Image (cartoon, rainbow, N blue to C red):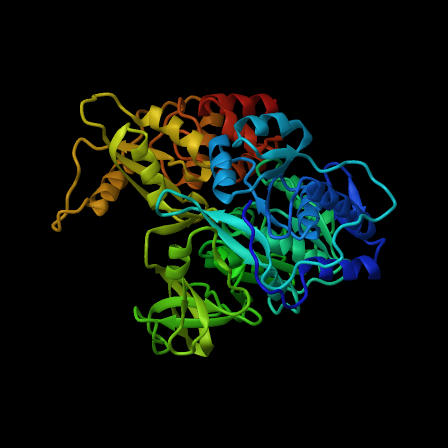
Length: 598
């Protein structure tokens, strides 16, 4: 098992949670609105303590990594706290990732224990490396506390490791210590959570903003409310749940915020705090929410995984955005230092573009088992002598010390909140042997953003490799890294420098997108005509027919929410995003709508 050893300083997260166990033991700590299951702080502490005992019986020692393969739920919270009470570190996994990727990450991390749902134990055991023990969260409840360690992990002791996409084709684990989460949750200046506040848990557990949803809440005496996916319910049902569960605080990925902002801009009106992050925030969407029933505080949050969820913030108000052309990433969070530097890490004057480096206690320990990469990205700033993380993001400081995002130095992108190294997809594609070269690019912005892959087939074959390649990648990469469009190149476009001409490839894609649809196959069907009109508005394209389906033309779960919501409004029929995603064709979707309406 991988272990870390470092001197501990400052309060650990378990200690901060225990303070609320003592102060408000009967306060609800977690409530599942779908199932009705709940636990107060005393019950959560005891349950997590019993899990800690199980882990220690499995020979889990301080600093060891424990993989957690659970969806948003009460059990997820118990698992995280139980691992922390055992003085170990948790490794959150994406339950929707392919089995091969989960197995690779568990093996790469050195974790020898995995916690999953009871019904998933056998399936997970079958795909994991030999020697990895699999079990579920104990379900029995008792009235006595456990004998979990009295001395809590703290300071430089790791609390979790999160894996992100890697440019070498190999995901990299970011090691986050207790002092980094302590910095995020103690006396926050970007989002205040008070005792009794109810915080929605909306993020994928493998997404680092889960850190805010769970630990900011449990260290403030609030209640965690695991929310269903926006794609699993109708937009109106989701908005109703915000109101009926009396949600006061929510963290949303940018793409999900954009979706709700355009369909139900009044959905956030009952909240104290709404923090949005992951990609560039759309100014028009924010103004739409501010003009409806805005939350008391709407914050644009920015921060890479290596800086523990958020590093800067900007409070969005009608006044702060007056005359703005784009929404800034704002000011440093508590105890965070920001440096805008040139290639030699020297500060650049205000107003000039430079790379953003982040310092302070929120910065990660480094990359798991990757000393060379750690040394490359975590460096000493020559002007201050401070250890900082090089984000690779280009920013500039504008009036009042506000930071404005300009883009990336490399080919790393954000898609629906997930950080992706495009080279990882390309390397995995070439490794299949189906293509000699692959070039992947992001096209579009916001919820309409998607990946397009340009392929040079392997020499000696005349077959189209796209179907086989899509299947191979689906088995190796998470869904958000699978291209929505595939273009087979008859030959490689080469630029003046002799390198592959990616600009020409994107131009070919844009030209293909302007093709006229093949005939008007909906003129005699008003419902199909309306459905296709909605699809054109949401997707921003028209070259599809009634025989196509939503996924074939680049649709995704976020866009399905918008389509379902608009069809509902037009025909007053119950329609869920899954109905859009699973329809075999647009003709079949129109039949579904017509049947429901009648």
